[in-house]
Length: 170
Image (cartoon, one colour):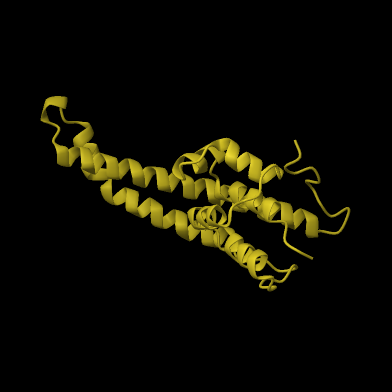
């Protein structure tokens, strides 16, 4: 069975925690480009598919793109364990530690009077903001991963054994 790359792109975007608008802005595209790719109104140009794949940094999507392009079955349809909460936790912890490394410097700068702010202070605060943004993105990805894991648990449980049958269907 061939991979539905549009569906897999949509899933990868969901897992990433990014919005279509964020991705479009970062890649100098309009949001409608991405929407048209996902709905099938336009083909996804190969170079753009690879750009989005690299931007999302989603290993599962990388494998799916490789399968789509090469026709080689790389993943077992039954066992996909690339995007797991443990992996996302490690990524989130890394981003948090990078942000925390700048906490003291940023807090000192935040308390300075405006007239005393230097170009170097602004660079430090911009770095802090970037790290904070990356940490937030990682946390969102971890939340999505945990939600997906819970859904998978529910799907894999025998009928009658699920306490939360309508999880995520509200």
